[in-house]
Image (cartoon, rainbow, N blue to C red):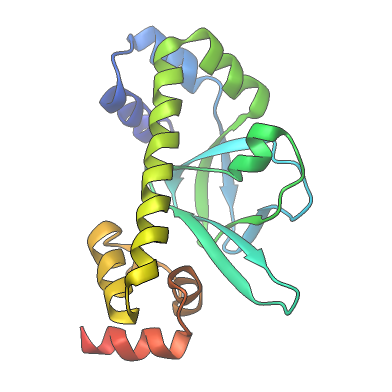
Length: 189
């Protein structure tokens, strides 16, 4: 159940086997169905998730009902509604599994206890935050000057499985394109 998480931890820092086991003991398995909402807008995020199998998506819905995908986490990655999780405040987004998924979840209290008591876990958390920030910045700043085809090429280069795993509608909202434009341009690649 924790094999992928153990590999993730071992690849990021030096931890003893006992520390790895202790960290993993705080994560519980949560199986979800396709399109299951884990967090609704306005709820306070109580868990951080590690994706064993499947995919998480963070998205918003505007006043016209249009969804905009903001973040995806696939196998071997972490995901949560980070502002709500950190600030312990109502979320301004939704968290959903877009495939039947197997997640390892850890409570907010346990997560921060590990960060505070195991320095290497604190380092891993910092690495997760830094990687997320860098990816978001590259996406935001890169997309500002990109045309539609360049956006698609960027996502293929930086997230190779993305277009195969995510629906055209979700991918288009992430890329800032219409689904028809995305379909037309994908056919040209």
